[in-house]
Length: 352
Length: 231
Image (cartoon, each protein chain N blue to C red):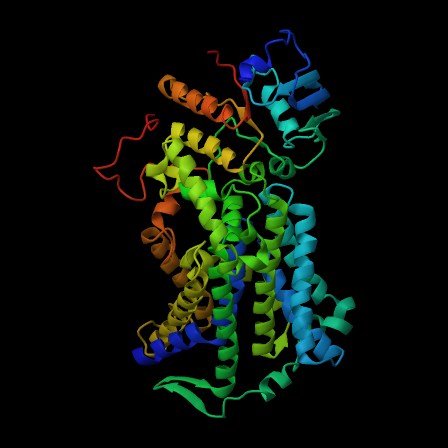
C-alpha cells in the first residue's frame, strides 16, 4: 500500500480543475444560501445552462468560444430571472421547489430526442473548447512535486479556474462587508423586519439570485471547457447537494468557506477512493468483502462518515462562527459573544 | 405650542378631524374569509403626539397596522400619509416616506450585531447599491456618519454596552428597545408600534414608555401604539 501515492491522488484532486469549478459554483450557492437565506436547490441548473451556453453556440453553430462564454453567463442571468420573478415574493420554500424542478426539467429536456439537433441529446456535445487550449501559454510537459504531477493542459485550466475562484472570492469579500451585503444578511434573518425599514427585499433577493446564478453558470462553463464535452446526465440533482455539502462543510456565510469546502471534499473523496483501491490491491481487504467495482459507491459512504464526524465536532463548518451558529435564524441565544466586563455599567432594561 | 395644546379644542369623539393630521384613513376594510377584521370609517392621527389604538384581543388593531403599512392588502378604502396617497404602496416605499412600524413579536436580526441592526436601517445608503458596494471609498464616509448616529441612539436607549454583541443574545426587553431604536434610524415622521408593551415586564414598561414619550416630543414625531395594556 503506497501512502505517498494515495496522498498524491487526493491532493491532485483537491487542487485540480474539478475542485475549482465546484468551488466557483459553491461560492454562488453560498451567496444564495449562506448570505441571503435563499433555498436554491437547483444550482446545477445554472451550471447546465452555463455549460450548454458555451457548447451549443460553438459546437452546433460554429461561433467563437468567447461568444459561447458570454451566452453561458447570459443564460444564467435569464434563468435566475425566470425562477426569481414568480417565486421570490413568496415564502422561501417556493424557490426551493421551483429550482429543484427547473434543474430536472432542463436535464430531461436537454436529454430528449427532439432537442438532439441542438443539444446532442444523450450523447451531448464535445470538442468545442479548442481555441481555449490553443491559447495555452503553459509549455508542454509535466509540472509538480514528486508523485503529484499535472499535465500542462490541466495547469492551464487550473490557472483559469482558480483565478476565477480568487476573483469571485475577492468580490464576495468586498460585497459582504458593504451595506449591500448587510442588507442581504438582514434578509436572511428576517425579511419583514428589513422591509419595515425601507429596503426593497424582492430587489435584493433577485440581485442575490442573479449573482449566485452567474457564478454557478461560470462553474458550468469551466466544467464544459475542462471536460471538452457536455452531456445532460452530468447535471444530476446530486451535484446541487454536493455543492450544499461544500458550503456547509466549509462554513455557510463565510467568504472562504465554499473554497475550503471544495478542496477538503475532493481531497477526502479521492483519498477514500485511492485508499480503498490500494488496500484491495495489496490484499488487506479481500475482494469477497469489497469488490473493486464497489469502491466508487463506497467512497461516498466513507466521505459521508467523515462529514458527519466533522459536523459533530464543528457544526458551523470549518470556518463558521459557533456563536453565530448557535443563534440560528429567529432563535434566541443565551450566551454572549464576548463576556460582560466586570467594569461594565449595569444595563437598564436587561432584566428578564 | 405643546402637543397637548394642539389637541385642546378637539372634541373627544371617534373619527374627529385633527388640526394637523399626519395620517388620514377613510373607509378601510380588511376581510379574512367571512370575518371583517378591519372596518374603519374615518381616522385621523395628529402629528407630534402619541396616539393609542386600543381594543380587546381580536379587535383588528394589528390588522389595521398591517394594512396601513403595506404588509397586508386592504379590501377597500384609502389613506393618505403626510398629505400624499399611501394606499396600495409596498411596505418598503411607505417606510422610506417616513411611516415605520414595529412588530408585535419583536423582530431583531439575530445574527447581525446590535450596531448592524441599527446601521442597516439608515436610508439612502450609497453602499446599498450593487456596484458602488464594491468601492469602499464611495460609501465609507456616509457609513461613518450612520454609525455615529446609531451610537447616539444606542446610548439613548442604553444599549451602547451591547453594541458589538449579536442581537440574538439580547434579552426580550432589550430587543424591544432595539426595535424602537432601529425604527428611529429610518428618520420617520410616524412610528407605528404594534403592542410595544407586550411581554415586557412592568419595570421596563415605564422605561420603554419614557423612551417613547421622549422621542415623540422633541422631534415632533408621532408614535401611534397599538396596545391592550392600559396605563
